[in-house]
Amino acid sequence: MHTKFLAGLALAGGLLHAAQPQPLNDEFLTRLRAEAAHSHPSVTAAKLRADAAAQDLRGLRLWDDPMVGLGVMAAPRQMRADLGDLRVGVEQALPKPGMYDAKRRKAEALQRAEVATTSAASLAAGALAASDAIELALADESIRLQQSQVGWLGAMAENARQRAADPIGAASDALRMETELAKETQMLEAARRYRQALSKKLNLILGRPLEDAWPQLLLPANPLPVPLAQAEIARLVRLNPKVRALNEMADAANHDTRIAERERLPGLALGIDANLYSGGDYRSTTVGLKMNLPWFNERSYQANIAAARSRQLAAGSDIETLRRELASDVLTSTTEAANAAAQARAYAGEIHDKAQQTTTSIEAAWLSSKAPLTDLLDASRALFAIRLEQRRFIAMQLAALEQLYALVPNH
Image (cartoon, rainbow, N blue to C red; front, side, top):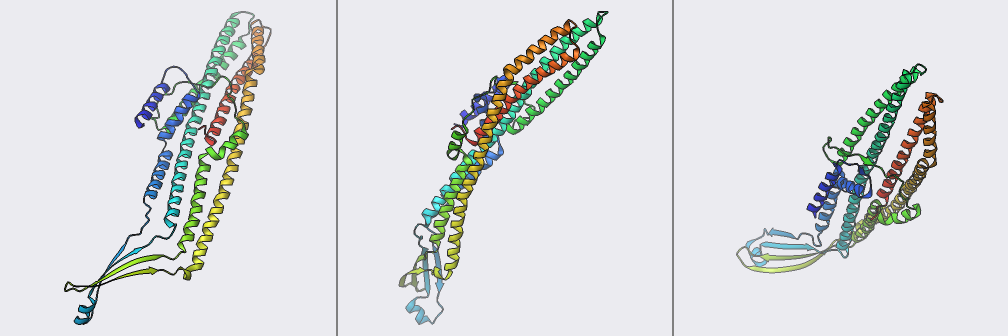
């Protein structure tokens, strides 16, 4: 199984370094989350704590270690010969009723809590990598739009130079276009440098060499469906690993109360003593039962029981507090995803079409000297801003859905 997982990661690495742009789809993000969960140190630490909890469970004992004693009598020889001058004793404490079962159930609950914490760490690492991949994809979308803008400005600058050669043409338009082209070119270079920084950040999260190359990433063309907040909140308690971990901690607190109640029970110990004479003769054997008297410390035991019950009640309140906090996060994520989806659809529809028509109309008017250059540049900037904003809304929706997935995993 481990070999298959590493092979899958190698295949994912090959896809990441492919020449063609990589769509930011569910399959790609799933591979990315799996790689992050496999390599992130927080997940490794959580797995080690889960292993330690499993070892704690295996280390539980029903029986305490027996006690062995050796005594020597100092007395007149005749007495030693009659009674024996060597005493060999063995004492074994007997288990208190229900104590081992309570400790075992507590250890099992703590182990399950650590396993759930490991799942939470895996989700957090995967969400971190996916969020950075979304940001990287948005940077690629911005670069593509800026490249298109630079290409358009280059074409318009060439038209302005040809018009400037005309005796009745305006030389200022050519200079203005050259300035705009230089500015957009510098912005494009800055965007490329920012993209390199984002790729290094993603490599750092995944534990890869910082200089590993990433292909261009493509955001979805259209927004994705948004789950209903009420349905996700209903699934929260069952699927969120942090809630599951707290539930297990509450179960462990319940067993702590059982342990405290059994500690106040009298403890019994079975003892066997054999008397021997150093001359080699056996004298006698005594079998006895010892019992401690816990009633002298009754107030202490009752305080321990009350403390355990208070922790149990506090654990239940902690669960409800976390559930409300996470439900609020679910509401926020679904609202942000729905708003971003609506904005993305609006900016891809009538808003974009109107801006495109405006820019085309003003461009034609400028080419025929019927519109000033400032109108053309303003229309072009507005169209570019609308296209970039639409891509940003798509990225915002993906980021919100990623936060929702970390809260309510789809499994």
